[in-house]
Length: 139
Picture 1 (cartoon, rainbow, N blue to C red):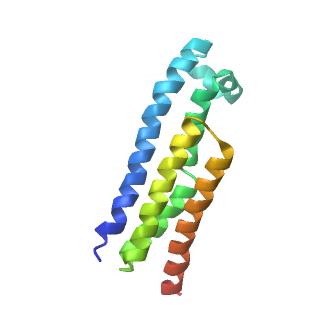
Picture 2 (cartoon, helix red, strand yellow; picture 1 turned 135 degrees about the horizontal axis):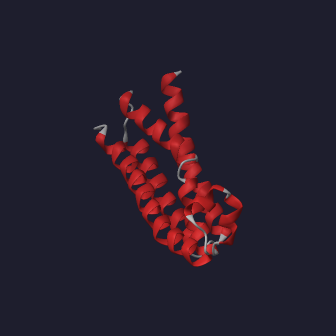
Picture 3 (spheres, rainbow, N blue to C red; picture 1 turned 90 degrees about the horizontal axis):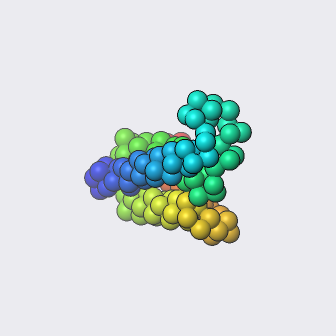
């Protein structure tokens, strides 16, 4: 199987980060303006607590995309570089990306924590399969 197959969900995740960045700008800047928070005032993050939950949730999700997904990026690219791309790895990578998209949508909109947690946990299962299978090949 071609390495490109596992890199497609990697780029989908990167595009998700871009979408969430734009969404964060579209919600945070107007919310800061409405709350009377100048850009420099945001250096004191306590000022951001004045923002409405809708703006905070989107920013929180954007930040979350630089936590667990960084492990996904490293593992997926390692699988591609090592020539370990197969159907199961690709399916797990797509499952991971799809679940993280759903997680982002839930967190940025309705923010139902039990649903978010379920999506987060399922995404970890997909990623764990990739990690364990990759590690078994390397070691």
